[in-house]
Every structure is written in structure tokens, then in C-alpha cells.
Amino acid sequence: MTQQSTLETVSPYLVLGQADECGRTIGETARNLHDLIVTFLPKGHYSVRALEDECGPAVHCAFENKADADRLAASVGAIGIARYDGYRSERAFYLSEAATREIRRTLARRRG
Image (cartoon, rainbow, N blue to C red; front, side, top):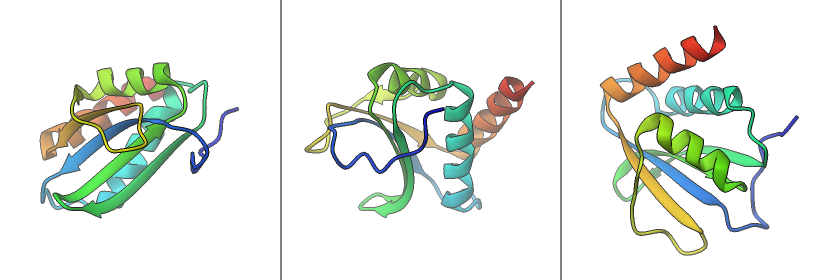
């Protein structure tokens, strides 16, 4: 089983969720995204990290495997943006209250 990793030795693929002030802690949203990723049965290492960046609260989901990043990006509707140095690609989506509700619904469906 693939485990969460810090991905310090690879140039990962980044999927970034930028949060609004929707009343939920960014840590809870990060856990939901992590749980969603697990349902995809990722093939490579990945990392999910909640942080405060220059635009406010965010969740960075970094993947060793492009296909794993593609699955999450498609699931949350992330679009390509200019990438941070050190990343092979970067996609982003807005973590609005509606988006977090949809992530929870998708997670519930995948868990069956």
C-alpha cells in the first residue's frame, strides 16, 4: 500500500486548493482531500499539507505519479496554472464551501 510521503527527493505534481473563509478549518479540508486520494488507490507517494500561503489558507496535494495527480485534479475540477519552482506541473481549484461539500459527497460515494 502506498503511504503518504514528504516527497523531498522528487519533483512532484501539485494540485493546490485555495480556501476561502468558509468556517471550516483548513486541517479538516486537508483530511477530506487525503481521504479522497486514498480512495483512488494512488500508485506513487503523495503528500497533503495544509498551510497559509500568500493568498490565505490552502491545501497542497503533491504527487510523485502524474496519473495520481490527474485523478485528483479531475475530481475537484482543478485547472492548470503557472507552477512553483520545483514542480513538474501545478493545477489549482477554489476550496469554496460548495467545493468542500462536493468533496465530502464524492468521498462518501467512493467509500460506498
